[in-house]
Length: 418
Image 1 (tube, rainbow, N blue to C red):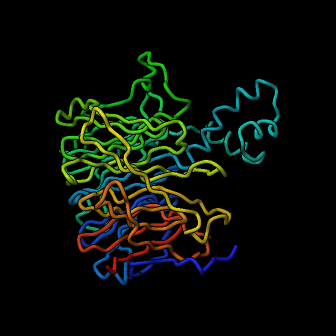
Image 2 (cartoon, rainbow, N blue to C red):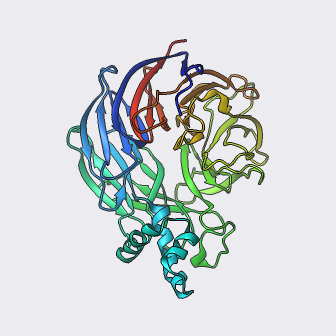
Image 3 (cartoon, rainbow, N blue to C red):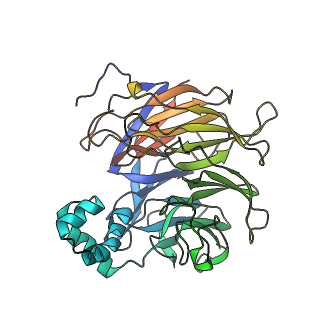
């Protein structure tokens, strides 16, 4: 399918530079450096000098552990934390079902059909199950020398390992599988001694701690923590198909739930991120939640960006939603062109929200009127050798420059023109 150039690829945004770098899951900017967690092994974590935004340059890189990817990264001062998660985790875990299917007398072709994979995937799944995986966790780095990150510690957790997470100078707020639980939970680690992070506390939803006799409340891993963002004395936790939770973080040794919201079953996509705006508007407190679009089926709703009235945490209410029409994206329908909501810049210090929309690129929304979100700018990269863009993550530096990372290939550096 050819790009329909009758659809404008940008509005209100100037393109400063593009770096053809392996695709990634997260980009964060601190000072004159950008940090990229790459999506796929053998790429790991890259450090870029962006002091000249027209000429971003890779100055440091660390590789992932074997059988792992390290697609998430956070930085606080001279500390960098990178996740370690099993590469192809959901696909490979299908292999756990193979022994029982063989006991049913099924051959490999029938097993593949039952698992929704190709027959020639079965040896790969068998091999992964037989070798197991114990590398999941996170790594802490000294990045005082950006050209040569120095590993300080490697904390192993359990299962798949660590997905998205948050951190500051004192703690790491880790979303991970842990033994005895179904799906990711929150585990908080003290970073006072970065060579030996120590667990401070845990939080999970009822039904996750099966080793303690709890009964799961959702199918498989549907009810789990995606990640929790530290916002003052609160955590704002996106809990996938279980909606969102707000936790009291004033006692870091005992986070406890103080608010929740679960979307109606008619909303099919899981909650990826939720955070409050840093300022109130007209005396009310609002938060922004965003879904993650998965395999879309015609007739089903796409993922949304949501505006939540959270003035009363006992009565959280969705008051507005924003969605991008397929007619605004020239790549919809192209093979591999995943389209829909994914993520936004995880700092809401104004009324602008910078969102990545997979094939829809970057969408900039103004929530000056929270009940009526307005799109004020957008940017969609041109189709590259890997196909349609898959804009995955975004950050904005202190000078207002925008860093948009593609899931497959490329980092674009942008700025608003208005």
